[in-house]
Image (cartoon, rainbow, N blue to C red):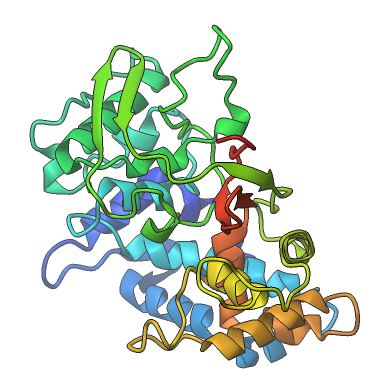
Length: 346
């Protein structure tokens, strides 16, 4: 576990070195620690194996170790595994999802340090020029616009934390639509299912500090929950219980859009409809199993075996999907998860 905590794995330049060192047939980077060395691919396979273990990994940990430490260890393994991914097969949005957990001495390197492994659409004619005299917000703005114009999507808005951005302040370093990638945090990748636009084309224009977006208002937010912990902590799951109490009372009530029980609709919102019935090609839980999982979460602290619960793969996936976010309900009674900046009246 101490090895997975080493900051070397979470440097932005380490990622690029590994990707470029393994590019091409027959090439493999070498990981060296002191006098010991191992082929990067062999090390990566070992970490991948640890990341995929469930009960076996749990039983190998010291008995006095809090169950949540298993999740934290898996989180570190997951980010080491992601060092193998990226490059020309990934969009800039996916690369920046992973880069949020990577540190660097200069905040501009959150973009400059990725240029060697960014996809061709971003490198070809990109407006991002390596110039360390420019302020980091300007570099981030250029990267945002270059990606958005090339893909005709605004998925990088998912990295904008409006809750921490004073949009009314004249002292704000950049417009609210420019992500602040300078912060290093272990954040879950935001999937397309969590975006208002999904994978649809976005219609927008840019003038100076103003980004104008054309869209259709479908609903108005009427109620907002507390924010889930942004890091993997015991209280991350506790907030799920709070959300259920706030928005699913009574649990046997009917969800207006589909006629399902509120409990069923609630768990479908948490797992983003990734059930066995709706995604038969994946090894996901079915709806009944998800509802049973929710009831186990609700019983945490009331006799539920926390160690066994944290060992479940879908628990880790659920935490990934909800942490740092809020639950909301619209005036029409619909609900779901949203970024921390969601407010009543939106």
